[in-house]
Every structure is written in structure tokens, then in C-alpha cells.
Length: 376
Image (cartoon, rainbow, N blue to C red):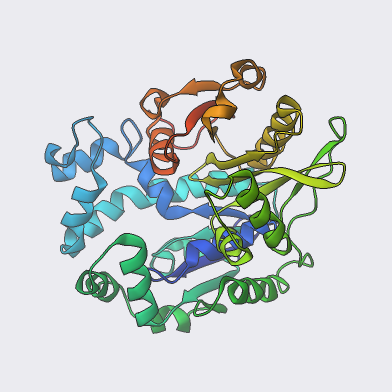
């Protein structure tokens, strides 16, 4: 039984390359608040954060990069083959992650909260979950995904897979098993069916209909809108990004869409996600036939409103150069043109570097002051 009254906690776990993060994102689309415990672990050891100095004291300054940040690749290489070192690292990191998760769950307005963690079953988080969900994929599927998405050799992929406990152990502890072996559409159907046991809402989050700005209104995109989204991106990118409905269905495992309508016609969109408490808007398309300033205001306001529900601390918008030229409109919305290095907070810098598309312009806005795991 969850220790958080009024909340229903889903613990989500699964081995590498089985799609647990995609499942978490789908549950977010359905209305859950979701927490990536492993990403919180990265925040714990950022410079100035609570775990930074203890990890340096444990392993030495050689783990620092030229900017004074802990190089997670160096640490991973060390603990990957040394179970004792891994246990020592977890003894530092896990208590802070539990504190942060507790804070986020209590602050969440959503009834259903999903906590994704690779070591969920080995931690005390397990005892605080009402239901355990496990993602499963056959080993050959895991190998193919690791080779395709991370550029690993087959031997490297197998080494990563075999370093983890057997999937059968996690499956045996599960209340729900999501078998990620087919298409995104098949995965979405499995997640939706399992969600029905948790919540009466079986569609994606309700359509947002704010007071229109003139004849402009915004609604949240749903998987059923995939074809329309694909056609709009293909058209407004002038064919530089050719997408079909399957591409968009795959993208729904990574981001959400706000759709802009004028006179009942789809004329723009924002593709965005909140990851590690940072909003990243990487797709921003607006038809040249509409008032750009009004359209930008409508889309950005709705992304921010949804981001607030997901407890985002900062908003990063990656605009196309043609969209970035009207600095007055961005200033009116509270955004500044920035570079990743200038963002100050390591989690925000990392998000910018990870997410920034080529040739885009970064605009930044801080959304809340009460940050999780802020420097001490």
C-alpha cells in the first residue's frame, strides 16, 4: 500500500532496451504524473547537489571533467565491473532520490503517479507501490535496439544485457507485464488496456479549449491525430522532414503535441516533453498564413500550463532561425535567447545539449523557483 494518501502509485521497471521509458511517457499522456528515478539520480551528483562531494570523496577527483562536473561515463565504467563500487555509489545516491521522489509525489496534483526505476524491485520504493508494471522484450529485440539507437556492437549490447538480472525475475514480481515486441500502436493498446484497471479515463488527456485568441485555439494532440500531424510537419518543413503516421506514433513515445487551429483548420503545432523536470520544445511549426505572434503566444502558453502540471522547473524552446527573429514576441512571453553554457544549472545545460536540434535558436524561461535537489 502506498505511503502517500490519495495517490495510486505504479512502480515501472524493466531491463535495458525493453521500452519502459516509452511506456512511462504513454502513461503521462493518459493523465498520470511520472517520475524518472534514474534521471533524479543524475541530478543528485550534479555540481553543488547533495551527492556531488560524497561521490568525489569516494572515487577521487579523476572522475571530474574539465568543467568540474562528475563525468558519468567514467563513473559508469568504474561501477559496471565492480559490484562493491556500485553498492557504495547507490548508498550515496538512493537516499536523495527517495527524498526527491517523496517531494514530487506529495506536490503532484494527479491521483496516479508512475515511478520508473531500473532497480525498483531492489529498493524500498517497491513497498510504496500499489502496482508493479514490468516492460519485457526478447533478447534479440534488445540487441537490435541497442545497436540501432546507441551504436553498440553486438558483443557490447549483449554485455550490457547480461550484466542485468534476468527479465524473468522482474516478470515474476509484476502485476502488469507490457510486452514490447511489436508496433507502437500495439504497445499503446496494451498500455491503454492496463490503464483501464487504474483509471476510468481511457482516452488521452482531455482536449484543452482555452478562450480563443481571435480565431486561434489550441488542443492536445492524440495518437488518433497522427496522420494530420505527419502531414502538417511534412508540409511546413517543405519536405525536409517527411513523416507518416507511424513516425508520429513512434514520436508519441517520446513527446506530446499541442495542436494549433485557426478556423477549424490545423495550422501549427508544438512538439514538447518534460524530462528530468525540464520542458524541451523541439518541434515548432506555424503556418505563415496566421498571425505568428498570436500563434506563438497560444502554443507557448499551453505548453507552459501543461508543464506546470508536470512540475517543470524551466522551459527550453528551440526555434527555427526565422521564428527567432521577432525578439519582441519572445520577450513578451518571458523568454531570453541563451546558449546552453549560460543556463547555470547543470540539469538545464544537459537538457539543452541533449535536445537542441541543429541550426536552432535556444530560448529560455525559468518556470519555478522551488527546484528539486537544488545546490546546497
